[in-house]
Amino acid sequence: TLMNGGPPLAAETLARAFDIFFSTKAGSTGMGLPLCQRIIEDHRGTVALDSAADRGTNCTVVLPPAAHA
Image 1: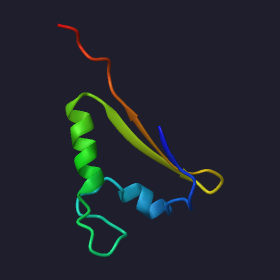
Image 2: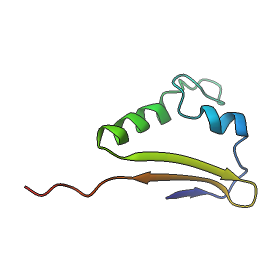
Image 3: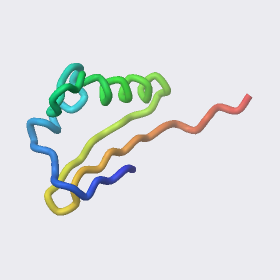
Image 4: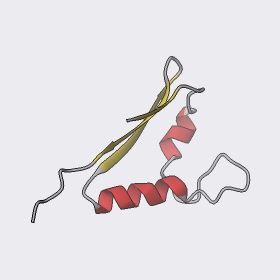
């Protein structure tokens, strides 16, 4: 889990955070989080964002254990 103690994300931003080409930053392509999500899912994992006023934003990545050869 990665935590950012800054201001929380707005509900609208949180709902669209993994949408391709969505960004709240000028000059951004909106490709970062969707690309991360795809890589994580290609490895059979999950990624989720949670944001609240009292603790900022959390990003949780869960990956399965590596297969042993």
